[in-house]
Length: 153
Image (cartoon, rainbow, N blue to C red; front, side):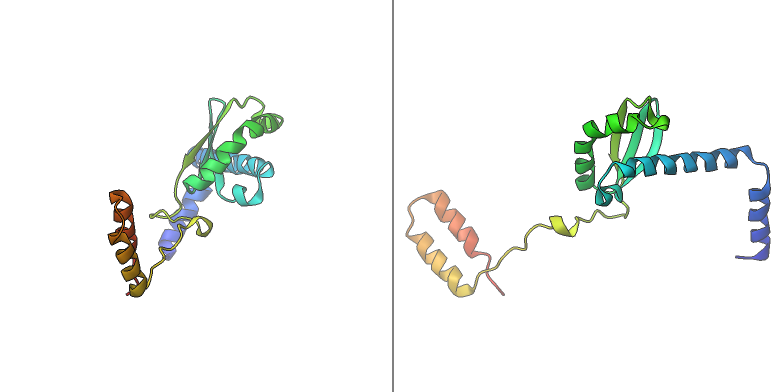
């Protein structure tokens, strides 16, 4: 960063800017609300939740994927009375949960990865096809033929 740009940034930060001051107060308030929320959640769930606004007695919380949003939504009925006990949230009526992925692409957490498709040997595939050819039930025969397609390469 050049000396001129550093001086310009310093000048803006040192100015008695109401907009900047209000913005910093809002950020501090939201951080405080996030900390209050985190006190009432499991640590792992809390690490995926962040308060982004308090508007018309509605606390708006974001999570980084649908899995955490679902877990959070199950907590809302128990959270509301607990949060209302705090002086900053005594008028809280609802909690709204939204999803905002932390990266450009959605990634399924490792614990929720779909199972890897198992492959069968060519010999096993031959045996399944031979068995399928003797079956008179069309749907069962089609299923067995589909299974036989999943061979190892």
